[in-house]
Amino acid sequence: MALYSEKVMDHFLHPRNVGVIEDANAVGEVGNAKCGDIMKMYLKIENDVIQDVKFETFGCGSAIASSSMATEMIKGKPVSEAMKLTNQAVTEALDGLPAHKIHCSVLAEEAIQSALEDYRKRQA
Ligand code: FES
Image (cartoon, rainbow, N blue to C red):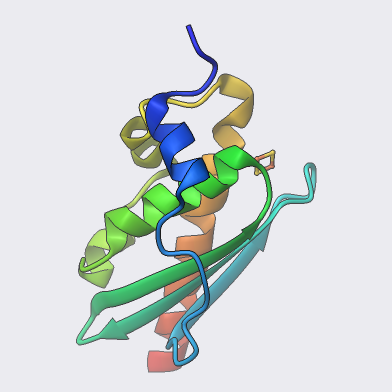
């Protein structure tokens, strides 16, 4: 069996939503101290709905695939729904990741949570 699913390879080779949103109203950045990978997430939220999302990931292929899939999963969704996105859901949507690469999907979950936290702070 191949180490990576076709979906992981597809999102790694053709990542969706890469880039920066200049007028984002929520930005989150997280890193993994062990591997040194960094992920930055930009959200454009209107009326509590995620109208646009982009990411920059300086990291491994699994982190890129996870961020790409995670952005697809929250685009157009209400903030309340995006808050519930877990790394397990991202991993499942990618048809799995090798055990030692699960932490890469955690980074995607954390980046989104961090951006949503930023949104909440800006609202307050
Ligand atoms: Fe660190 Fe993938 S090896 S995010």
